[in-house]
Structures are given as structure tokens and as C-alpha cells.
Image (cartoon, rainbow, N blue to C red):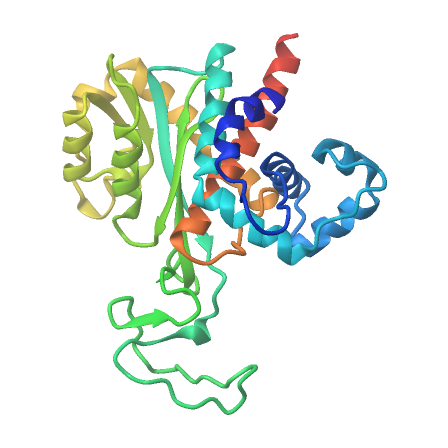
Length: 328
């Protein structure tokens, strides 16, 4: 953690304001955000309360025992500077670089998958785009009757978070407003090497997978494991054009013909990729149970992507610690 912050120090200098009241040091801000993710503190106000009396939290952030704790509103305003400086992506990249220096990453075998992240917006806010909203009977909690109304993402949008999209996790499940979070995992130790957030759609998983693959160093032949949702001819062809072997699970249900044939499945490496790809669910499980990503508290694709990337970096730090302890 200290080494990563030291490498980011030149970028932190650009975030300081030269006028106005003294701002929160970006290093302390980032350490406090890391505590919030690692200890599942659900709001900035609760985080400030913890910093007020928890001496270990104060030590980690860099506050003296008698230093005043920041106001929660000031804290969130200063966090916007980290968003503008793309600090989460830089933090994540340096954590991944640390794992690579320790020999914990595979450079050839990867897995990609996506998950739904519930948006901070209610179904009541999902209204028609072309019709002016009716005056609410109760401004605080209006009554909205949408039964019998056919609601689609093409005709409706959330007034609270316009980037959120209506989606459902599966057949028979209720539809909610979601984003999609995507992770590219290396298969050796299950560390995340890439991640992003997109508005939910039927094509978001495959589009994100190609984007994450494009960011990899492809100086050798790579393999990519994925579930049945990626078994389409267009995606498999696009992956092969990138010089990557698609180890995608075959989707042969409902009389479908898989885009993956015996030329791929006959190799032993295909079975290994199918076994290893399931570890990506451990990342999603950690993000949702500990990393505050079951339901995001932020609005807009850019903010949600920032927090998702930062939570992935936190997961990698925990995983690197575990792997280092096991090898010691």
C-alpha cells in the first residue's frame, strides 16, 4: 500500500488546490476510502464516525490522536478530485504491477465475466422519456402505478440516474435498475487484471470483454475462459482476430449450435480453463458482500466505474497478502 501511494505521489500533487481552504491530502483520502471498502462501512458519515474514535483507523489514515476529523460533506467533495484525476485506475494498475513483480500473475491464461450491480435509483424514477411527469401527490414519496405499462429502456429512463438500465438477473426474477460490472481475471491465482462498468444491456458483457482484452499485452498466444453467455459467433470470431484462443463454455441448449467446436474442446487446456474460470465468482462475491458493490451508492457510469475499479484494487491487495503469507 505504501509503495503504491509513493508511486502515485506525483499525480497527487496535481490534485491540490492552490487557492481556498486547505484540502484533504489525497493520500489520506485514498487510505480512508480503502478502509471504507475493506470494512464495509456503508456511508461516509459512518466512516467519519469511525475515524473519530478508532485509533487503528487514525493510524492507518495518518491522523494524530488529537487531529480533528473531516466533515462528511467535505470528504465527499474532495473525493471528486480523485475521480477527476483517474486515481482509481492508476491505483489499480500499480497494484497489478506489484503482483506481476512478485510472480503472481499468468501472462497467458485469462477469464472474463460480468455481473449486475444494482443502481442507486428506484423503479418509481423509471419514467417515459417523451411524456412530462405528472405532479406527484407526495413530493417525498409519490405514488406511481406502472402496472400494465410496458416499460423499455428505449422509451423510459430513470430521472434519478439516467445511465441505469432496466434488467433482470434471470427468468422469473424481478426487473430492477442495474449497471454491469466486468472483470478480467488471470487464471494462476485468481487476481483481477482488468475491470470496468457499463450500462446494462444484452451486449455489454461481450463488448466489455473485447475492450478489456484489447488493453492486454498480446505478444504471445492467450486463452480466454468464459461462460455460455459469450458463446456467439461474432464474439468468438472477434476474440480470434485479437490472437486469443476462446475457451468459452459451449451453449448447446434449445437446439443451438455452439461457436466452439472440437478443434478447441479436444485440448486439455480447454478443460483447465473451464475449471479455473469459476474463480471469478469469488471476486464478484467479495465485491458484493464486502466491497459495497451489491448496490452502488453512486450515480452515473463514471462514478460507479471509479468505485468498482477501486474495489477491485482492494480485493487484489487482500488476495496478494493471502498469497504472500501462504508462500512465506
